[in-house]
Length: 401
Ligand code: SF4
Ligand code: SF4
Image 1 (cartoon, protein in one colour):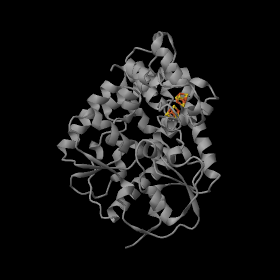
Image 2 (tube, rainbow, N blue to C red):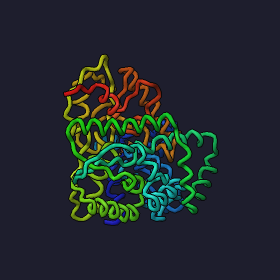
Image 3 (cartoon, protein in one colour):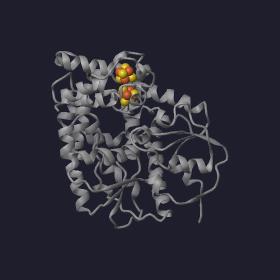
Image 4 (cartoon, rainbow, N blue to C red):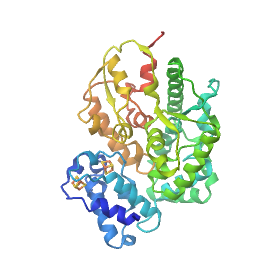
């Protein structure tokens, strides 16, 4: 089946009932502009492939999809508008529809050249200075997600003062002279950097106290390639995933401990589709914790990450939190959880900010204390000091055995 047939196969099932619009976070965030909602994306994709897609300015509709998959859980026809958006981005990238996004192009070129979306591979390892890791076939993979948050936050602060056309021009210029992207190392939120590095050390400490043995590649650790896949650069992703997998095989890795949902998802669900005889086992770090905790004095609410809850089966983090505190879940929880808006942060910061404000307000209605289990969720929702990353929250409650 070719790409167009694959898209048609999904969009052809849509009965245009609109149930998916009620859960799609980007629809209200973009002022109810229908092409920024789930149903609009399906209808636009269907129209585009049946007409002349070159003539349509359709890229933003699909690029702004958060890939949260909230839509498929309410669709009576089983349509996943997130997957439609992924396939349409692939069509845009292939040059067969719409206009490529210049920021996406820049990110792609940076990953292919520097193994990090913002050219920050070396910076991503400094948090681990002085930590002793084991030499074994189990590897902790950070995905460089905690490390990138201080940079994306600062870049978006600057972006607010820049016209969108200028942003696109700068991205195009950086794409043509990609070594200049390394200038981004100078733009980061200092306080958030310290906090993210502290969270990474908390994760290592929780795992080591649980008796888990694992290594870490340090400055050799490549970004896993989520943006390449998510933005539709499938040929590049295939090449890149093979490169990453070859490195893991060379290092003798048999098991990966992922510490963020996006890295878990890509190694668990996407790499096996691209790598023949993929043999590495993936586990989420919270599932390995074996510790005694004291109780938290108060109640909490939890932002369940969509890439774990909606793309994968449930994981033990909620059970652990449940054992130490009364959890007051927001109205949208479990398989109905709502995305934090984080995946749109680099391409659509306005939409991302509006989605995160909405989610933050929903969570705050339930409890003053919000626990997140993903660095993107933390970065998106940390509007006050009572928002905690799981690693910090649990790290404070660990009791000596
Ligand atoms: S819920 Fe499903 S069938 Fe209804 S409009 Fe959305 S995609 Fe189409
Ligand atoms: S995956 Fe999420 S953002 Fe994308 S269309 Fe579905 S509900 Fe909307």
